[in-house]
Image 1 (cartoon, rainbow, N blue to C red):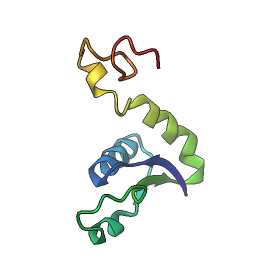
Image 2: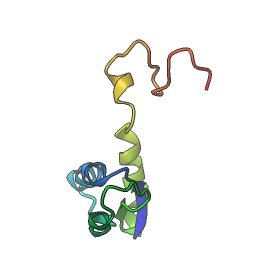
Image 3: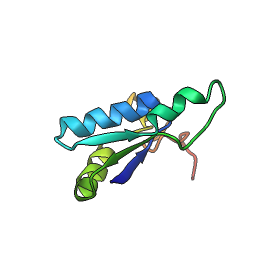
Image 4: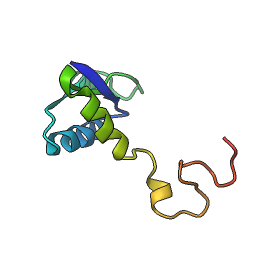
Length: 91
């Protein structure tokens, strides 16, 4: 199994998992059971989406097409460029 997406939270992980499964790529959410024990503390890096080794290239291509984290740019916000950065920011 290969990790193809490090999720910010369970909802994020399941959205990606379902997108992969809709495309016919079986996926697994790693670390789902671990999040119940952390309480209110912010712990990062526990949850990830994994696929079989042979499906990794196709899964990564699909995840790239999802344009995660670019919602503000897609909404036409004039203060945000296509990369999700503030307009006019040279970074």
